[in-house]
Image (tube, rainbow over all chains, first blue to last red; front, side, top):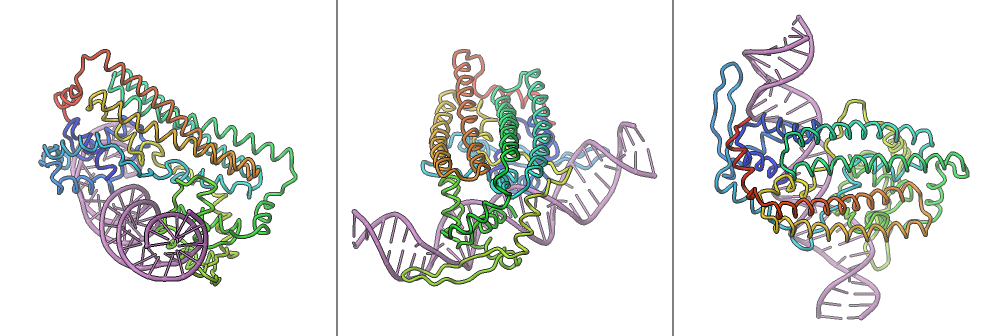
Length: 201
Length: 201
DNA sequence: CCGATCATGTAACGGGTTACATGATTTC
DNA sequence: GAAATCATGTAACCCGTTACATGATCGG
């Protein structure tokens, strides 16, 4: 269900073909928003079979024909319902941090590694974060120049703040890791031993 | 692959049975880390069939027998390799914000709704965020009392900062939304019309 | 007696990821 | 001549989610 609505939304903004949807998303949210083909084309097919969009073939001279998709009335209605729909009361919206992020997953077990190994992993992650941060900052600037939809700007703004959160947090992590070096005491595996000794359950 | 390593890591800390793994994770990361049964038990089976863990049945008086899992030597080695493994150079680590989060997905299209509808959705999301924030703060406090692994504390710390990011960002979003009320000008659908008029591609 | 807790799983479905397959045109 | 861009898709695999299925004990 998830990516489908984004695609539908883009089509409501302006009818277009698969390849162009990809481009639009990359342009508004950074290249890393890589909507892959194996997701895009089947999603379009599903939307069509559900009657939410309809397709016309537009032949091109000197390049494969485009499949131009347009939202139907039913599709527009479904989209608006989705937009308005609040999350039904109790539903927890599962862990939206931690999972899906390998670094955080690893973090929980980092005391098993030597401090310098931890340092290397963190440094690597940091450089990735900074690359993304500058990407997104450029994207936001462009959106501002075009004075595009303020809510879309806010989405990118979120991304920027998210990268900054990572950056600051990584600095703190590295500091914690340094502390471990200066105060040795515990060798990397001591936690494990303690835990095993302590019990199960 | 993803949850499997977390499970394996927990088993390396201390051998235990499925149900207890669930509990441990809930305890260290908040109840919202709901590792569901349909994920947990098959994952254990896969880990076993791969030879990374081994199982012994431990009968209980007055409750179903426990299946106690222990990491094997191969399993420990695989885990350490995973821990140490840096993300192979180029791999982009797809969009880790925006997707998987319905609210952000919706945000991109929020100008299609009336300001008060946007207000309601944001307020709802905000209350969810605050609930989580206080949950996680309690978790962190407990971890500190037990003076548990500093890296695990950092994971929860990340979660807290993440919720705070959401909170602050939602305030800004609500402010932007208010601005829209005071300066009417654009009716909710004007963007759509502009876009359609402007062109496709 | 009811609901929570302990304890195990399976089945069906949907969706994301990667890789494969094709082929013309444009740019360096 | 090679690589990128435009343009479409399919197939296989893995994984996550939800719901179903079972059953005993314990506390209120």
